[in-house]
Length: 392
Image 1 (cartoon, rainbow, N blue to C red):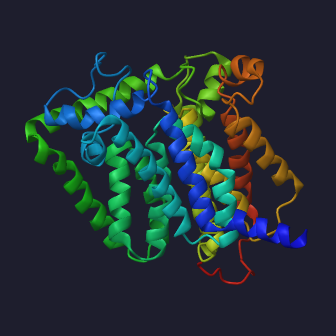
Image 2: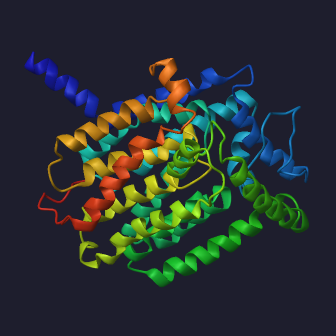
């Protein structure tokens, strides 16, 4: 029995087995093919073809897909390798690339072996949620984690590349600059961001025209401003702290700034603890805070964006150099069942449809974790007495 348990443990913690698990999840996304369930991929795919044809990117195309594109013109180049093949093949490659990208970002990070294993298992169901919607948010999570890793490894040029790709595609990537103070080459990082911003701004013009792309950037800005207002009470949008408060209050009379400004202050306060910067656990916890803050204070947050926040939750739990107590374990269980499972059929329909969805309560478990994280970053010492982690 002992040998069997040891063998099972080795299998469950083997990076190759975990890679296969995540690849199976990626393939599970192909069950969404047919009956319009691959709609998000079609929206992404047509960004490339509309740029090629110099068609408006932010209009309805009911003959091709429902809903609208909200990604920047630069996304046309990101999606190009997946837009050119037949739809089924392009979608398959897209899902595999998204999953593999996040796997590699975590696997080649500064996380210890057990941290990686925990993140892979804890986030598996949330990954499935995002994969079934073919969401680019998986790539955003990978971009943020990888940009942190690259800055820590003094590869600021490539960190800047990822940060700018995320910014020019969905704006979310800009939060990678939260790691600016961890860079040993701040001037190089700023210059690299400026370089890549210029490259990515101009790049779509190579497959269309300058006039067309400049117009689409203007339309993109207008689209995002309009979408922000539309998301206030949307059932499947604004699943965030600010959305939860607005939907529970039922009021549209106040500005989100009343929540966003205090939230930003709470997020920034740990930067004052400069003496803690030298501790890897502190830096990783800030990474976790970035991943959660991005979702909790965005009106564009939806069910499938929570792959970003849940990766943050897993990093928070594993990064602390102290032993986690039972309140933290309870929080993690709460996150797993009432966040990652919130919109699944495993959640009783009445709770899902009458409580969680109308009031964006999927956000609540992550809100509680983020509040606890902020408190810890204000008062705890992150000095790590554990052995230096060895990459495997």
